[in-house]
Image 1 (cartoon, rainbow, N blue to C red):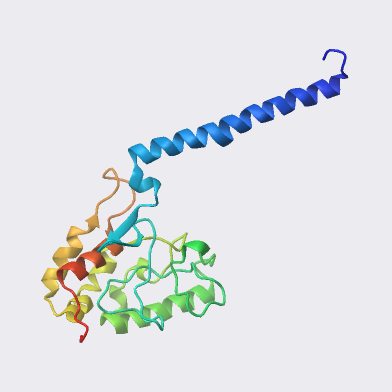
Image 2 (cartoon, rainbow, N blue to C red):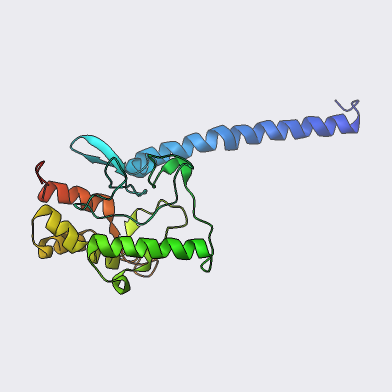
Length: 214
């Protein structure tokens, strides 16, 4: 080995290190961490999937749209934030598509974004029968990923009357359910209070189902 040229010996040493670290970081470490995660945090390790009546209906980490076949929001459900996670050109992709996580990349003064916000405000005002001044920012702006699964309590509040009317129950009952699925700040000081939309809507279907004739 010592008879080999220095440059050859250096390449052999580098190749050995490459093989060692490939095994350590590319095989052993992932296998060990996957094993630990599956034992200690199986739900989170498998995507925090949410099941309803024996079927997986979504993930608590990702938003999902509650719309009809035409993309119109269903009044009996709480609606998530707007989402730009959409396949460009797709006619049946209305947002919250985990394959296309993205933000709008539009600045706050961009005229396109300003127009989008105005349109969303008008749509929400008509859909929820509220004043534009009552509509919180998260109801008309997308998240950085386009996949934020939660909405603000203020966003949920303006939707209560519409959901209650669609399900033929009192707003007080819907509000109580909203409060049940409202989470506080992480560790008491990180982030903002938020409402778990997917699990809230599942609870609505369990407690106040909409009849097929409604």
